[in-house]
Image (cartoon, rainbow, N blue to C red; front, side, top):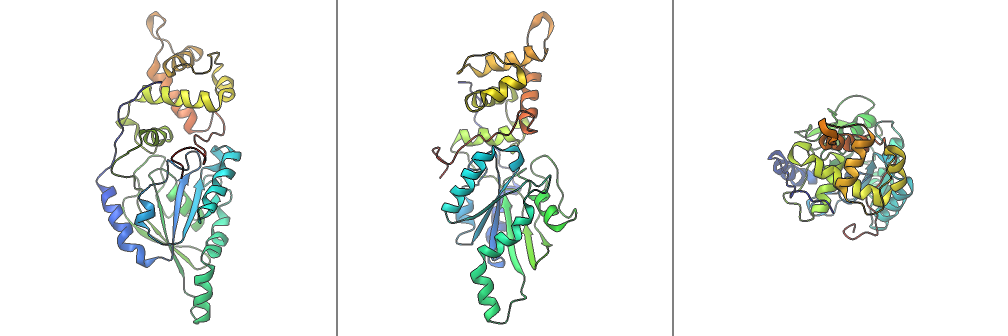
Length: 291
């Protein structure tokens, strides 16, 4: 098993975000939580249950086009069994984004009916959107709004302040910056976040990270790795050996025939994150820690 240093990353503005969520919770009727469909458990902030105490929750599994379809359905069933509403979307293509409004109205059906009975049927629904960095909140908001309202970039930590966004169908959405948590008690969670780019690459050892990812992928999706890199390694092969074979297969050699493992590592991470390896989900609901 390859090893990597302990990962900790909690920029100061994230402390401010936690306070912002708590302070503005009384302004909203529900909380929309975006998670990464490739790592649905690891991309959920464990503090969110306490931070959003008691508010109805809609879990939106983003990047579903990059995730294993069968696993995504398992996760949707899991979240619904936990009492949440849940949908799977892909913000880049817009797939299933239109499901948001009916899902939200179903979630808040009781509140909507109470307001209607009081003659307040036209009152907007206020929702807060939360999620870890780089999960696609800004892209999701822009899709819902049909315009580029929120700043979206393919790197964590872009959104820094809260903003209200008026959407169709009488919905107003409060956007918040992405927030991780102060300490990763489970380093496996931290690694999976780093695999997807939710944690900045410059705070981790890229080569060690790629070795761990290759080990995980070779255990879960060996056929995809073999197809992409023409690997011939046996099951349970060490991550370093897998990385070296990737480098050799791609001709990433230094003088003397030494493999340029850093270049190979960057390639593996980039191709995983861009779904060039295929549709991959790194965790399942039945795994320990998914509850």
